[in-house]
Amino acid sequence: MITKEHKLKDKWVGFIHSLQDDICRKLEAEDVKALFSSEKWERPGGGGGDTRIMKDGNVFEKAGVNTSVVSGTVTETMRNQLKIDGAKWFAAGLSLVLHPLNPYVPTVHANWRYFELYDKAGKLTDSWFGGGADLTPYYLFEEDARHFHGVLKGAIDPFGPELYQQYKKNCDEYFVNTHRNNETRGIGGVFYDYLKPADEFDADTLFRFQQANGNAFLKAYLPIVAKRKATNYTERELEWQEIRRGRYVEFILIHDRGTIFGLKTNGRTESILMSLPPRARWEYNHVPTKGSEEEKLLEVCLHPKDWV
Amino acid sequence: MITKEHKLKDKWVGFIHSLQDDICRKLEAEDVKALFSSEKWERPGGGGGDTRIMKDGNVFEKAGVNTSVVSGTVTETMRNQLKIDGAKWFAAGLSLVLHPLNPYVPTVHANWRYFELYDKAGKLTDSWFGGGADLTPYYLFEEDARHFHGVLKGAIDPFGPELYQQYKKNCDEYFVNTHRNNETRGIGGVFYDYLKPADEFDADTLFRFQQANGNAFLKAYLPIVAKRKATNYTERELEWQEIRRGRYVEFILIHDRGTIFGLKTNGRTESILMSLPPRARWEYNHVPTKGSEEEKLLEVCLHPKDWV
Image (cartoon, rainbow over the protein chains, first blue to last red):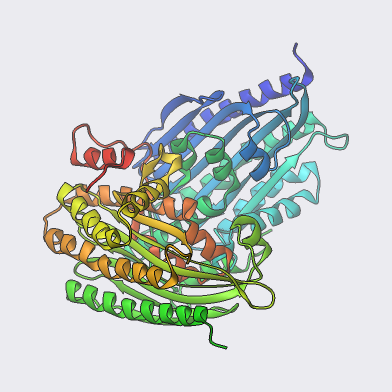
């Protein structure tokens, strides 16, 4: 029986697969040298995914653009630790993390997902969309921060004038290393979750909202790559890039809900951890020099700003 | 009022401080070039510590030998997530992680700790010792594994002939990346916890047991350092070292109880995370070449062996 809900699910799966193709093709064009390899995998509990990895490019040192369409039975662990209430679940999403070579080009992450829960009889009981994108520069260029946030805001504004501010705030509050004086991992972006079809925001509108966000991503990110990728750098900038990548690792492994969800639901470890940077460094008690560009970046991580 | 328990606490604090001095002095002698710096810190909630760090040595790329003597009120988080039942707590321990430069010299970790719990009136309600040491080689030398385990066994055997096997098994079961096909982080060692003073194993015996373990550590580790530190290596071995250090980071940030305890109890982040390696690397789906030395090491991590 094809219900309206099943159609939405199919439409969503179609969308993330074509967005994956589009993003990969455009990133390859930007990189010129490296190509994405594709690895299709199956999840023992149900479903599978398509993990696309690019490495050692001209621009991208390590990049992953994954889709997964997975489903399963709600386990005790999911019930207790992830607060998921239902008998069966379904999740489909696109998740990407791009780590460029040049320390003047920011790392970026984005994810758009759709989740369904069913009761024992297989009846749909709950469903929601989530997603977002956030930028992790190693050096701060205010015009880049304004551009990134500006494009994301432009995609969201048609759906409600108050939404960008709310999702920007969510993002600043989510991507935080609470164990590091609440330092954010970068200059943020937008982050939203549990957007459920309801009268004021129906399933079709939500779907168009997700499309608008997904389609805005490269417009927000690629112009920054193009502008910064030929900047000269030295050993010093690479060191700082590796130190900040250490913080990125800490966020992903200690705090990130998506990572924890994946590892707790018996996900494919290599696909989940593709988000980790190519290299990271830890120095005891590293503090940037007073007045340096490194300190300037850290300052906006400790005190998130409004960019648009 | 000085009770028997308070004397034990004081004796333990004295022991870990003198062991810290001894270990640091001998590691400096082995390294020849680098010295430990000491940073004494106070914990806002009670107590403090002495973090000793050596870096960029001839032998040790990054080494931390910490003591901490801390106490506080049992919080909701501790009660729920750490299953600690009481009103106030006290913990004192020595914790060390040594990351050598040469990929033929193993990374090593050791920790010996003492914990007390009190009721609202300040009366001691529970206390226990814990500890252990484990070795993380990048290349497997069976004679080194036998030596390391042999010395640890020699220290433990006088306290009970069955204990080493039990604590060796605990170690193999604890230092495991469950999200990586249950790969252990190295070739193990010993690990024990919740050793409580009881009739068959009184507080004095437990104290001597901890001393025996603490004092055996350098005898187990330094001969391996001396034997391997001048081995020639190339870029290939360094790459493998960084990949394995990535796994070390994953264990610490995802699974390690000590790290989680520290971060959840508002511990000093820089001292807790001194255990992280100087550098780590993540390559998508890295698999060692068939029949290589790298594969041989991975094999014993996937299938822990008895070494003595």
